[in-house]
Image (cartoon, rainbow, N blue to C red; front, side, top):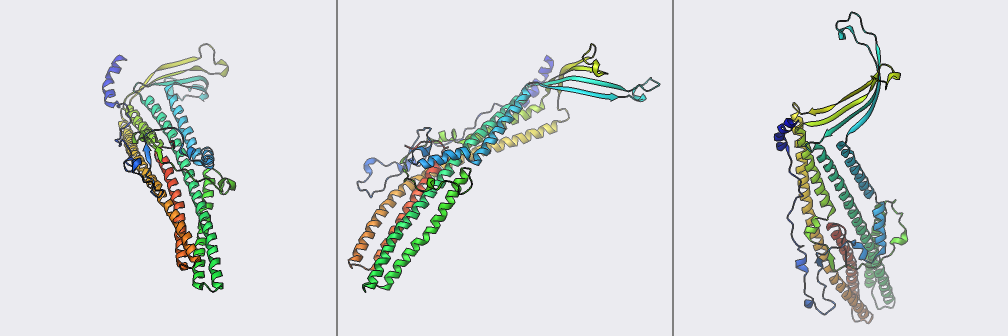
Length: 482
């Protein structure tokens, strides 16, 4: 046996596989957005109209989900319910259960296989099968019971690598489940913010419609008193109708978002309680984001970790495939009883035993083994490219989402100043018109400007909130906002 093992040393060295190491992809030390938002506190003006500088990005990390500090309990309820009942989450859980079962199944190859057997057969040999006999032997009945056992001695690590590979795939499924949870939470939050934005735009349109009806009534009264013109009345009505025309669009968006939220929570569309989604507080959008560093992102984002575990599994499968070049040593045993009558079983002289090693070698089947290695190697190359692409995509999404939120956050201050100025201008135009100091066109222009500013501000809040969600999703899902 020692000589056999020594003879196998050379092919073993040729077929050995280096130990797997997680790949290192160069990443920047910080996010670039931090370099364009750093504004000294003393550089800020004292006027309330000066726009607030961009966000601050911190490399600190914590475990609080981003939605917990937004001040909206409804959003928290929706996300928690979605994490429990969403169908995509259930699918991912089923995949994880399957992957873990597959790993346990493969692990059984490390232990002996023992099966019980029992058979009965009737046989009769021909004269040709019994040379030297002039007559055919009589038929005989054979009864056989016992067990068969086999155990592959994993001398070259084929089975061990396969078990480790299946374990890596199970870990990949765990990260896949986490990735789905992150995506579901982000989609719930995005849809919820879109719903709130549509509701606020509908409210803005309603308030403006009320004011514009007053203006229409004023122009009609002035026309009746002989101090106005039909042109002013029709122009006022036109502005009112254009405002009213926007309300069906917002109502449609609200209905769509309600249905989308219901489906995300694993329910039939339009089954969420109306009171749950009627109103909500204005979001407290943060000035500082605690998102960690790009290097931390690579080691904590679920889809990156999933791709890395996939690569680990494919590398181990390559090692298992290469081990097919080497001999397999199996210890086999057969034991039991055989007799010509059932009642003779287990009696003295009916026992049987066969035990010994079995060595198999792909002597004339090397071509199949080589192709299996090629398939495994191609799978490893694909997993490596997928991992690199996932890392680059993660960096791209994190950088892009931070810049988008930074600029959306800065835009809100400008829009708030625009709304304040537009409101003051509309009041002044109304007063001057009522005093007869200006014509009605200035009132209509001021009203249109105010409506547009308020609508843009509402859209700006929605855009900033959805950009915040994109940051949450891009950096891996669990980061706090303070």
